[in-house]
Structures are given as structure tokens and as C-alpha cells.
Length: 128
Image 1 (cartoon, rainbow, N blue to C red):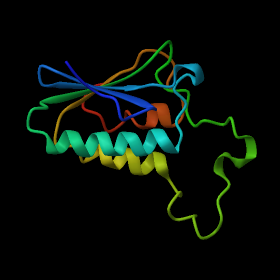
Image 2 (image 1 turned 90 degrees about the vertical axis):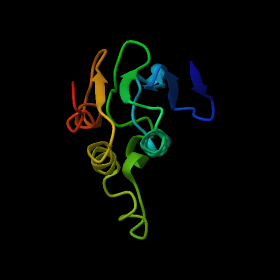
Image 3 (image 1 turned 180 degrees about the vertical axis):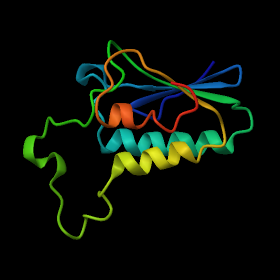
């Protein structure tokens, strides 16, 4: 098994041609944040470019798949200046479009609650 340790919000494990991406914030029920979004986008880009990867499984660490957006910052969670508005307009939608564009089959192994972006990101997947 090959593990990639450069990620914090996800785990990237490759074994026998199957990449398992695990949402790895179990203390927050894998709540989605900007770091997780960026790491997932990078992981999907890497997977598409790796001919050794034949399929992808996405799951969550712990007792939940994804509790939705991380609201721990309260009102600041979605606060952005007008200059940043376009860049942060729809992180979950951009992620869903990236998943839709994957050239590898992807399976959502939903292992508990999936709320908001947690369920939305699974919609373009091949198997849920």
C-alpha cells in the first residue's frame, strides 16, 4: 500500500490499483473546509494523471462521512471581501464539477451522516 503523507484533511492510500481517499477530520465529523477542498482537488488531479490508478473510493474517517461545511468559525465561515467573492463563490460546486470530470470511476463509500456538501459531492460519482 502506498500512502501519501503530505495531506492533513484527507488520506491518500493506493493499493492494487485502487485509490482510497478518506476525509480525515473525524473530530469534526469530517466537516468540509477550504483545506479539504484544496487537498481533494489536488488528489483528483493526481489520480487522473496516474495510470496505475484504476478506480477511486471516497469515504470518511470515523463515524461520519461528511457533516457539511465546517461552521466552527461562526459568521466568519463564509465571510469574504468582494475581491475574493468569485474565488470562493462555490467551493462545493467546483469540487462536484471536478469529480464529474474524473476519467476514473469513483465510488462513494458513505459511512455515516452526509449533509450539505457532504452529500452534494457524491452526486456526480459513479456509485453511491
